[in-house]
Every structure is written in C-alpha cells, then in structure tokens.
Length: 334
Length: 295
Image 1 (cartoon, rainbow over the protein chains, first blue to last red):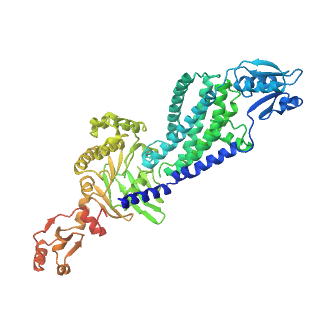
Image 2 (image 1 turned 45 degrees about the vertical axis):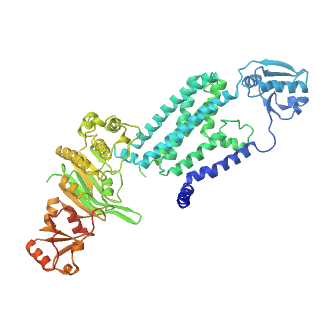
Image 3 (image 1 turned 60 degrees about the horizontal axis):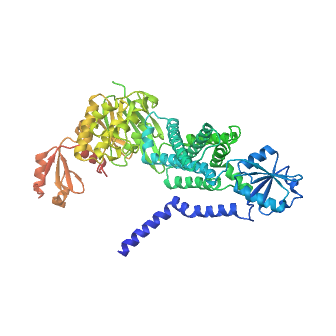
C-alpha cells in the first residue's frame, strides 16, 4: 500500500512543481501581498482624521487644535469645496480661523462628532455650523468596489480563459477555416461578455441596492456609461493576455499577476490616500482604480460627466490600446 | 481535359529538423473523390491543412479554380478536421446554426439534420454524442455552406465498423451530388470504396498516384498467397519466389500459381493454412514502401 501511495505522492508533487501557474500562485502571490501591505501600511502611525482648513494651515497657527496628534490638516481653497467635502465625509470637519473661529461638521458623521469633541477641548470658543449630508456608510463605500471587482474577474477570466480553451481544443482552428475574420471573432467575444456583464451588474446593483438600502446620488445613465467603459477595458485586457498564448499555466499566472494588484491597490477595500506617492501613481495606472473612482464619484457624490471625464477618457484609451494589441497579435491555432 | 478544381504545385512544408511535405504536386479534377493515403506522419494532414488554407506552406502553392486560395475558396470549401472541438453547452441543432451563420449562402439546418441522420439528436448536447454521431455532426457542419469541395481528414478513425459503413453511405450520397472530395485515410478499404484517384504519400512525397484499380494492375499482375511465418521453413526462403515478410505471415506474389504451389510443396511447406486473395491497396503500400500503413 505504501509503495502505491508513494508513487502517487511523487507523481502529484512533480505535477505541482512543474505547473508554473500553481507555483506562481502559491509562492509569489502571498509574498507579494504581504510586501504590498507592508509598504502601504508600514511606517509611522497615520492620521485617524482629516480636517479641512479654509485658507490653508497657516490659519490654524495660533490655535491649540493645530497640535492635536493623529489629525491631518489639509488646505481647502474655498467654502463651497469645503462644504461639499464635509457633506460627503471626505473630511471630518471644516475649520475657519477668526474670532471666534468657526467650523462646519456633518451632523450625521461619526468622525465629525469625535473631531468636534477634540476641537472643543482645544478651543471652547469655536462656533459650530452644522451641515446636513447623507451619511456614507462603509458598505456604501464598498458597494461600487464589489461591483467593479466582479466585473474585473468576469471580464478577465471569462474572456481570457475561454479564448485559451477555444485555441487549445482546436475550436478556433475550425472557425479559422470559415469566412469568419479575427476582427469578427474578437468583436463577438467583446460584445457577448459586455452584454452578460452589464446585465449581471444591473441585476446585482438592483438586488444589493435593495438589500442595503442604497440609492445612487448621481445619474444612472452615467453610471451605465462608466460600467460599459470599465468592462470594455477589462475585456480588452483579457483578450490581450489570451491573444496568442496556448499554455493554461501561463495564462493563469498572467491573469493572477494582473488581478491581484488591482484587488489590493485599486481602493476597493481601503483608501490609498496615505500611501507613498509612487504607489499611488502605480494604482492610478490600473484600469480598476479609474473605473472605481468614476463609479464612486457618480454613486456616492453625484458627480456629473465633466467631473469623471478623465477617468472615462483613460478607460477608453486603455480599451483601444489593448484591443489593438490583442487583434494584432491574435493567433487562431497553437 | 477538364480544368482541375484544385491544383497543388511544388508544395513544401518544413518544421525545425523535419520536412513534413517535400515537393508535392498533383491536381484534382472536379467531382472526384481524391484520396491521400499514407501512414501516420507521412505528411497527409499537413498537406490537407495547407490545401485548406489554414497552414502556410514553406514553398509552393495551392490553386482553387486556377487562382490562389482566397475568399471564394473559404466560402465554397467544407472541412472536417481529424479532431475538432465544438463550443460547449450547444445542442446539435445550435452547433449547426452557429456555423450556418458564418456563411452567406448554404443549406438549411433542418435539411442537414435530415441528410446526416441527426434529426433524432437535434436537441442533444453536442458533448453527449457517440463517436459516430459526433462525426455525422462534424460532417453536417462541413456541409453547412453547401461546399463545392469537401475536405475529410481521417473521418472514420476511431469509429466502429457499423459507424464507418454508415459514414461511407453518407459520403457516397455526397459524391452523387457531384461534389469534389479530398480524403485522407489510412484505411485502405475506405480508400478503395470511396476514391476514384489516390496518391500514396510517404515521408512527405508522393510515391504512387492513379486510380486504385490502375495502380493495383500496374504493380500486381498476379495473385497473392499468404502463409503463416511459423509454418514457413527457413530453407524455403531461398526459393526463386517474390516474398514479402511481415510480422506474422509470408506473402508471395506470383503470376504462375501452379508453378509456385509445386515449388512450395517440393520445399516441404505445408499448405493447409495457405490463403489466396487478390492484392489490395494495403499490399500496394507494402510493395512500395516496405512498411505497413498504420506504422
């Protein structure tokens, strides 16, 4: 019995070691995640609260509140921007110097409540001016990220693996013997996945939205445009990965190498606001970051098309570039 | 003379360290079933795939109706590969409809289901077909554009005898419609049954070409005697006879049956298990190459 067990044990070990995709996934990926998290969250303790200061930090120079630890003070150029930031909880409180000093706080914000207590302890003269704004719960903040993640996995793996399977099985070779062109085949793949993912995302949006009582602050048609461009960018990326490869291990490894940085760095789970600048630049280059930024802007803050135009343009450019690379390098057969 | 529908000129296909096709030249007249025969690795499938326009040759060219392969060829050619996967989760009818949708002209899906005896299977998942049923579906797909020229690459490999005979009947019906068929096979009975012309390929070269009957007449003027190896004494090997040894038997080709039998009896060869038969394409291949077709 032992001999047979050892024979199968040995063969399985060889299979695992020689499967580059599994090896990559098992060894390199956890290591990268740990290193990535250490880089993002390492270093000195980060501020817990952000306070906007009208007129810049110099306005606070003579106030004891300025010496509160773990509070980050950021300059706010004008009152309108500051109130918008308070309303949508991008800052916990807006401070304006004066005699007495004033501050604006979102009456529904837990962070606003705590920072107000800190400010009053430091300067009891400060006059409170309440701002009403819908509270953004963590689940609200997370919701666009989950939708975007689902879209990313479905598009990358749904397209990448399917095209690879078609090539490996010889189905692509059979199609190549018909009048079907590469452009038509790739176009059909894009449209099919686009239709499916938009339908799924719409159903998820409606169902989850009903469960968590979420209502988008912005225009739903604009949100659909964001989803459409985001999905196109992901599909194009998936097509590029699978355009000419025939090795399942390699495609699996590449897709994981692409997806995990997006999962970690795109701001799905936490904000990268305090991360090193180079990491934020890297995160900005990821299509999921741009998709998520636009989706959150529309869903949570009611942004219009002008506000998210840079994200939309970026996603469109990414789509065109990857589609061009995918179409140019496409191979029908192994 | 009728212009060839397909013409292969000086075709060469090289891979690193291997020449798969080594200067093939032949023509296929319209309405004919043309067989490319040879053992595994002879270059049949490579030649077929170049003729089908899906594999570029290293040198040489293929012409369809006198012109290089192009859009017209793709629209008018039907292909059954040696191994073809289909899209998952589609029924037989949906698989046919998918390929029908890729051509501007062609045959009705229901008509094809009937022609290839697939009506009862129309609603079945294509992954749940038997070998013979699957080959009938692949043949129906190859016919979906009502092709002028049909390529069949080892269409009956792996099928049981009953399924092979059913498939031959379908091919016979297609031949009756006047379509040109290019067939590769290593079943000699299949070639003899279906092909009007054959080319025997070995090591990427044509070693004989013509109609099966003409080739057999050319190479065998006589009958073939078969004796078991074990019953053939070593001394008899020096007899003045045309002998061919295979693993289990000795084959003697002769046009003087009486004289040969006398010689064998005189040499003490027992004739109890002697078999006499006319030569076939398998014998022709052995004669020409010295090794078996399925080697």
